[in-house]
Length: 239
Image 1 (cartoon, rainbow, N blue to C red):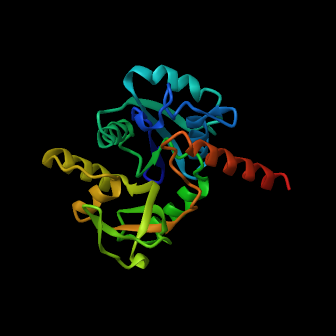
Image 2: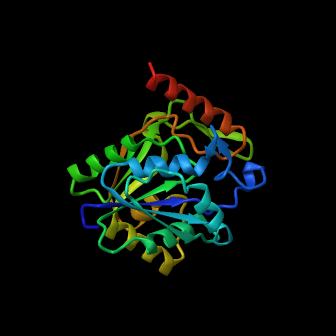
């Protein structure tokens, strides 16, 4: 493992309360396999990836390990780390498990099983092409009209051309991500994604357009969409 290699922190440490089903979303059946198995398989197929750490609830690591035991990891080393109370704590635990020798760290939601290896590749290409960048977020443009609302009343309609929906993976130069998380711990800064922590310390983050079907499974009804997308991909592969 060296400076040119990428590690992926797969965040699967949440309680999944909004999912509303016993066992949580990470182990939910998705076309005959646990959802997390699909996520891990895509991560291990990404170019340049040599290490993946799955951050899981401490008391369920054995269960999660068994759920992905049949995944072809393409000779990628896979480890586990115990999650924390917040997503930010879980990511920090994952970063701590990544060998210092690795030059790039991507963070990906375990509940985004439809991610493609190409998404990771596109982010890496952009990051390597611009030495000013500390990271790259995969996302997509906003097509719906946006409204700012307070107390049930619309107060503004912003220009939607300026807005993107942030997804994961989010890929960073390892030193920049580590530094941002260290500063966040020292200052008690809390943000909703990894990019915003890097931005908060002056880091420059780019964006690359990803697939809109890279959905995050949050509630049980999202599984139906995920199954439909996987089914369509299977048909395309055999045409």
